[in-house]
Image (tube, rainbow over all chains, first blue to last red; front, side, top):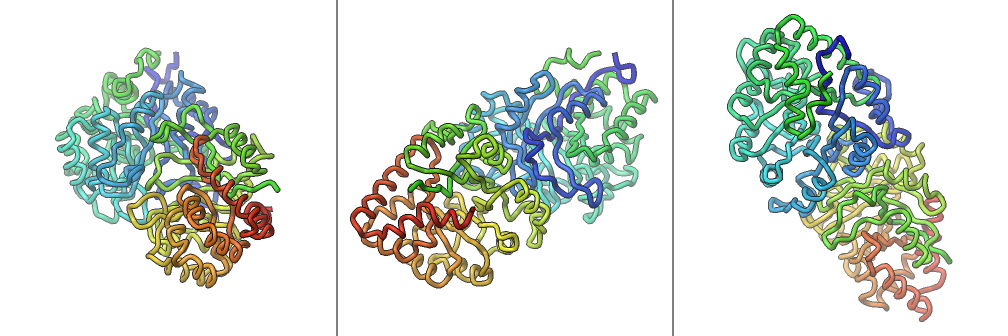
Length: 315
Length: 276
C-alpha cells in the first residue's frame, strides 16, 4: 500500500505516442528553447507510477489547427491493447470529417471505434464555434451514442486550437441545454479561466490568479447542467483550483460527482503535475476536502463514467 | 520498366482501420506490395491524410515512417502537415516541423488538402516553407469549398497560377478532381505558363479523364511528359481503376500515340529525378 495516498488515481487526460522514435520533436511550451515530444507508453507508465495512477485515458489528436503530432485512433487502440490493465482510450473524429456538412452521419465511425473498445471522444479541438451547425450535428450524435466528449476550448476562431466559445461560455450553455444526454468534459485555459466573474478577455487564455469573489461561468454552468463534467488536468485545471483554495474546497464539495483528475503531460519536461498532486494531497490531509470527495475526483467519477472497475483503484 | 507510384496509402494498423463505405479499407503494407507486383511498381510513396474535410481517417507521418522502416525496399514516404497546424495563423513558423521530419527521412509533404483556398495566406505561408526546404508539395484539390477532400481554386485555376509564379522554386504536384476537371480546359495553359506545376494521376477521376479521349491524352502526355507523375491513389486493394489505367497507358504506347520516352518519364523517371 502506498502510504502517501488513500487510493490510486484515474488520469482522464493522457497523450502517448506509439512511435517515440518517429514522433518529431517540437518546441516545448514548458522550457523555452527546448524540444520535447509525447511520452512513450513506458514513460507514461513510469510517470503514472510516481503519482500512484492506476489507469489513464489515451486521447487522440484530430484537428489540423492543433496537431503538431498526430495520434491516430488506431494508434490509441493499439497502445491500449499493449497495456489494457493501465489504459483505456478515446477516439477523435473532427466534425468536418466525412461529408463535411451539417447532416453528416457519424454512425458508422462511432460504431466502429466503440466496437473496438473506445470509451469516449477526445481531445476534440476543431476550431469552430461550439454551437455551429457542424458541431450541433456532432453533439447530437455523440449524445445518441452515449460517448462522453473531452474537449479543449479556444477563446478565438484563429490563432489557437480548440472548440470556440465567447466569454461566459454561452454556446456551451445552449448546447448543453439542447443536448441533455450529451456529456461534455471541459478542459483548457479558455475553459478554466471562467471560474471567476472578474475575467477580462485578455486573460481568457491564461491563468488568472485572483480569488473568486464572484462566481464565473464554469461553476454556474456546472450548477445548471448535470451533463457537464470537467477535467482538472494541466496547468489550467491546476490553476483553477490552486488560485483560491477556499473556493476550490466549496467547488469540489458541490460538484464532487463531476470533477475528474487528469494530468495532460505532453512531454518529459512537464512537472506541474507533481506540484498539483502535493496540493491536492494537502487539501485532503488539511480536511479542506473529504476523503469521499477525494476518491470521487481522483477515480470514482471517471470509473463510473467510463465503466471501469473501481476495485483497481483501492489500495 | 518498373514504375514508381508517387501516391499510395498504407495503414500501419490494418486490424483497426475504419472500413470505407463499401466495406474495404486502406491497404496494409503487405497488401500494397501485392498491388505493386500486379502493376509492376518498384516503389511507392506513402502519403499522409491530415485534413478532416472529406476524409474519414487520418494517416500521419509516424504511420508512414513506421511502414517504410518495416518495408524499406518497397516504400518511401511523404510527411503530413497542414497549413493550419501549429498556431493556426498566417505566419506560423514551420521550421521546427520541417527539420525533424526531413531528418526522419520524409522526401516530400502531402497530401496537403486543407479546405481553404489554395492561395489562402496560411496555405501560401506553408508552401513557402516547402519551397524553402526544397520539399515537393503534393496538393490535393477538390472542386470548391464543401465538395470533398482538398483545397480548391476558382474555375481555371487562376489562383494556382498566380501562386506558383510567386514561388517559382516550389515543387508543386496537384492532384485529384479539382485539377483533373480542368484536363481539357485550363490545365494545358496552366502547365505551359507555370513550369513548376506538376500533376499526378492518382484517383479514379484522373483515370477516367485520361481514358476518356486517347488522342487528347496522348497529345497532353507527350507535351507535358516531364511534369506528370504516375500515381495510383488506391483506397483499397479492391480498386480496379489503376489496372484499367495501366492497360490504357500500355496500349497508348504500343499504338505509338504516346512516345515511349514520355511514358518512361511518367511512370518512373520523373519520380526518380524528384525523389532520389
